[in-house]
Image 1: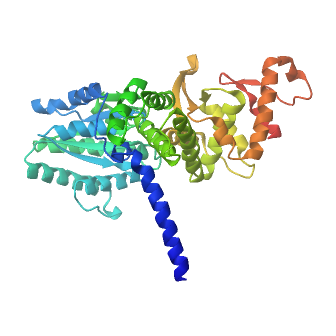
Image 2 (image 1 turned 90 degrees about the vertical axis):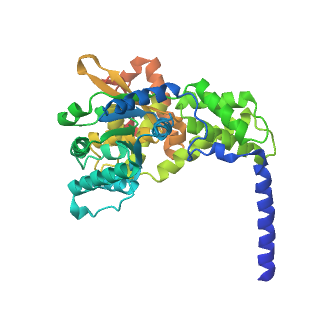
Image 3 (image 1 turned 120 degrees about the horizontal axis):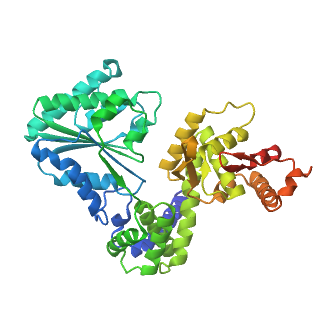
Length: 445
């Protein structure tokens, strides 16, 4: 037994030394940590100015009731907002991440905890929770001898997408709270950070009329901006200089897919780790390997931990993208495909609920969305995958072979429309919201 343990310890030491030796490529790996607060802020000076212009009115006795900060994940929304508030020394602020909140009451308790107060029981009700928030803000301002307070609510989508509650009631109470504190001589502003514009959610007119129009949109980082971020971070993170062509490739891949600076940094880190395992200098081939690995692992983990209906929804989007090569897919087409994929004994979710799941996919970075004009029929939302559809199809190799057959049939029919009258093709192609309805292929799926 002792001999076995000694051999295991020797093997562990050998593996440990090998891994430690691989880390020599890094000088300070914290500059590649996507979860920590960035040590360097680049390319967002215009957004700092925009947010500052929304808040600076407190110096003249005015506070904007609500500022909606929105944009894609990884565009710097949270970092810049906190940076501005931290540098306004004569105001007090509180940052709350609502990702853990499942209800509006839970959100109010998270606010209380961030203010240093104990959460209250659900029996007390939302009104009692809002009153406790009011008292906590008052105490904090009096203690710090300040008159202006900014409440930052990050990941606001997590509660606004919850159809069980009433977002208008919750935010109406917060706006009334601002009015009550103003009567006490305090100015309060609310900042919401989300992927979508705050006003786009279902809100009552009583809320919309109070919040006004104060938005700051964070567009995705450009390729040039991502390169600058990688350049500055790599100079600190690595023990030797990284070739610019490697950084350019990382920024190019990031900009083409999502413009997410965090993912670009993660891509560079994984590429460096891949190179160090082979004891090679980091090059473009390592970046491409890392890019493939991130796409497969990230989506694979997401799909495994997703709900039953979310998995079918992902397969529906992958199927449409692969067979038709349509870049943008209408929500209605996705919903129709999803229902056809489900077994007959399974009850499909409602159209509204599927739309919510698509928004969750967008927040996870699996899809991106766009609003399409349909003339007299108004506007509709359409979605596009950010990953190759083959990654989804290969989750089920047997079904993926059928996808390939359908793809060939689809293009045969596209190139020879007369085939639709052939009895061997038991498929019809109807117009459905501006797209070819090739979903009849499900007869052989």
